[in-house]
Image 1 (cartoon, helix red, strand yellow):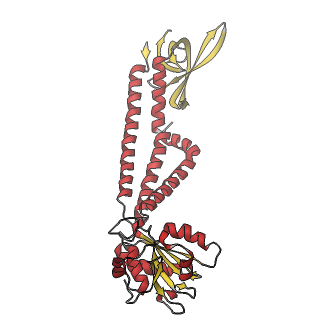
Image 2 (cartoon, one colour; image 1 turned 45 degrees about the vertical axis):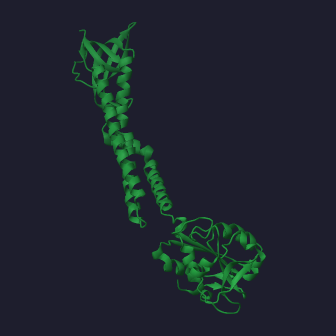
Image 3 (tube, helix red, strand yellow; image 1 turned 90 degrees about the horizontal axis):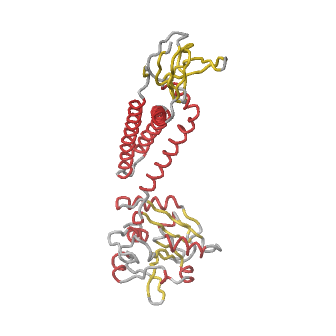
Length: 206
Length: 162
């Protein structure tokens, strides 16, 4: 029997392998490359927004485009309505564990203990990253944890993306973020994308 | 006795061929996997084209591997297994009368062979006995009586009796 005949005979039994194995290899390769090129913790930002609605795609794209040259590869936003029953849980689980920045109304800040999760502002942070001339901070137990970026009943440049509640809104930094240089729990001097975005979100220009 | 197959020599050749084919396959596999690994490790962020190239390379490799294991290597392994068995197994010797050699090749346990039809007499009755010819020339006339040395039906050597 020649090789061709042998091949024909074996192919009649094995043809599913000729189809399935390349598919499995293709999917595995795609998965591997996807995992390898996933943005690192210091290359992505997550913003937790307490509002009724958000144009998430446009909002994230705006920030991403702004800091793309600084190495920002992915921006995600988590929106939750403070009036929802699950808001507190979402803030606890998704916000505290995965967000770099919080955009929260005053009522929410009053209902939580910011010292557990938010970066207390020191003079250096205020000097370098707060853009307002006369900033208003959210103060709890003598420490400032957020800077007011939107006054009640006053429009803000982010209003084009976010449907804010009719309250004062504060921008806060998550102490667990890996993008806040050495201000958080992780000392990573060169990774400061959250701080850059913090400045940008205050006034629309970094 | 005319030797059709030198079992010792053939078993060495078969073993060498099998190992050579396997070595070539392992070397090619190592090259392919090293290449793919390096391509993945040093891939750039825009990897769509690379992904398609790697899928094409791996597809060719998989098809090649399937072909290799189902045809050439399978054959080499069968020959090796047969000759190893023949080397260590019990050989039988029978005196038979040549009837014919059937034209065309047939498969004997996956090995390409020709069929030699013979017959022998026992207790006044005539029985047919088939042998397989893996190698060598066999051009005896019908009716020739031979002493056949065989293993598992494969004729290894013969001696013309009359």
